[in-house]
Length: 331
Ligand SMILES: C[S@@+](CC[C@H](N)C(=O)[O-])C[C@H]1O[C@@H](n2cnc3c(N)ncnc32)[C@H](O)[C@@H]1O
Image 1 (cartoon, helix red, strand yellow):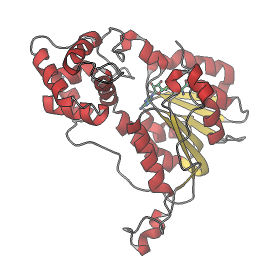
Image 2 (cartoon, rainbow, N blue to C red):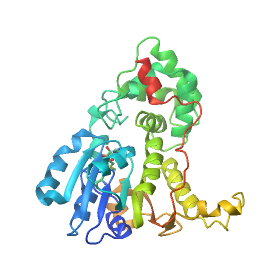
Image 3 (cartoon, protein in one colour):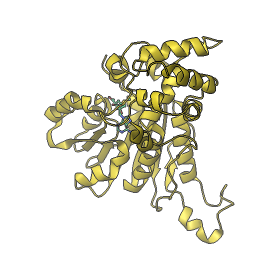
């Protein structure tokens, strides 16, 4: 199934594109957002995606929009380098639609889904460790941390212990084998969702470093947006939305309000670097959710870049979760 762009009207309104705008679509996917943005003549758009399988959609936009459209295959944390490769010194808009696309979930070979048997992969790109590497090589403690922090799985420890015991007989290679084990260990319980849901989500977030990528991309967007430029983010689960919310909240805070810990003489350093388009996250309308149930958990947050210098916060990280380079070295 092709990917139906989520909250497209709301995204376009929040981006407020104008003649001469330079926009980066950090999550190109099937190009739904990019196409709608490029419909505004006089706009130049740079698409980014780490997934090489989006190229047929890239070609379609190249044919339709010529030199106004360009594309770089990169994780979106590489935003600044990608912009520099276009010779741009800043941009008027950055949009992120984080998460997996319908094309990725629906293709069993990509290994994202516990509903379809396939290789236990889950990588959005074509490099780096797979979900099978994580499940077969990390310790029970590390797996527990991943399932707990990235999946909010209450049975994290039980699931990790069962995986470590089972892999001593045979390593996990398929989504089906892992889903079956999780169904046995975690059971259906009171939840309506499949027992493997949270562990699969956690592994996907881990293998793609989704939270680290998101927080680095937000920091990069803050550096590359020109004053009055717009940052628009659509997130699909609470872990991502929390990062976006916190990012905007810190940056839109007035130094005199709620920043009591900041000494007066450094208040200028903490002048707001964004103003918010709305205090609360914008949700999709009922009509969209009934047409596209995958839109139901979407939350849009957007800000307008102010003149102030960027903040210098560190990207998020969780203790007890090894980084992907450490896992790669174990393969
Ligand atoms: C939800 S889809 C975007 C759909 C797009 N808005 C559209 O209208 O077709 C998310 C896309 O972002 C890509 N993606 C997710 N995380 C990424 C990252 N850290 N770096 C680069 N691309 C990423 C995925 O490969 C996927 O193609």
